[in-house]
Length: 265
Ligand SMILES: NC(=O)c1ccc[n+]([C@@H]2O[C@H](COP(=O)([O-])OP(=O)(O)OC[C@H]3O[C@@H](n4cnc5c(N)ncnc54)[C@H](OP(=O)(O)O)[C@@H]3O)[C@@H](O)[C@H]2O)c1
Image 1 (spheres, rainbow, N blue to C red):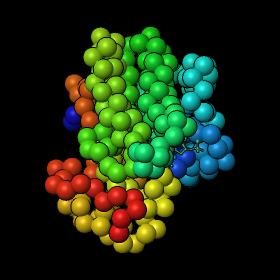
Image 2 (cartoon, rainbow, N blue to C red):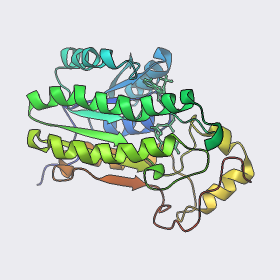
Image 3 (cartoon, rainbow, N blue to C red):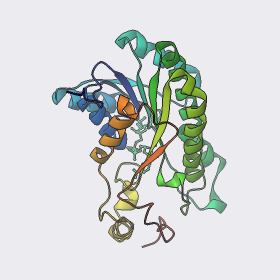
Image 4 (spheres, rainbow, N blue to C red):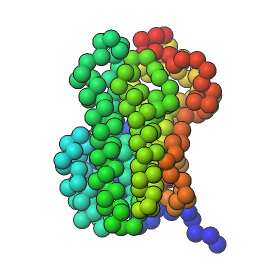
């Protein structure tokens, strides 16, 4: 008998933005594989409710407040998890946002909102968690990239560069943290209907056009990310670092035309 390489029993995982959308799906996947999962976000009721959903299915989870853009508070946030749960083995940097506006109308506030959350906060979460993981002999960091890490889309002057930055940050930290046995990888989701893009999906013509670009013939569901998250969080991926796994129904592989714009039908 070979031990299950995907088993996360005894591991402590943190998922930022774990209360909704893709983070909630990845958190449920990690809990299903045996990890104790901390779901963190700004709305306490949302993360607590998502944690309760996991506990209702037999998993172990807690919902906690964090605003990851408050950089100075991040070391105390991660130290608190270590103190409460005796470990910090897995970090999923999932919290993210978008501002969709034409490039010529893009404001400084749009830019700062997106880049501060999607890139700056990701780096400082990695740094604070990695300092703890180094002392503990290793860990797993999973960043949330995007198709936008690889391709440009209309009206995404900050989002696409921020996600391209996440890809390079993943490679950069994989290099620097390998000596401490900390794996740094990313998941690149394709199109998933979540609160982040629900306004686009409400336009049925737009949704049909977007779906037509996906070889698998449908958009993703948060559960579709669970397998990649468990793989990258587990010892099954111990020799994998600096990679982006695109979970996109083949969209990037089949990408031949520019993406449909937010205001096109
Ligand atoms: N949906 C897609 O098709 C898609 C595709 C590619 C990549 N992604 C990426 O997937 C990730 C999750 O997005 P989603 O689609 O699941 O959208 P979502 O449901 O809006 O998730 C974003 C999460 O981030 C949290 N968050 C926002 N600001 C935060 C802050 N300052 N501190 C802590 N948490 C914060 C939000 O909770 P609070 O507001 O309560 O803090 C929310 O739970 C993002 O990085 C996004 O770029 C999504």
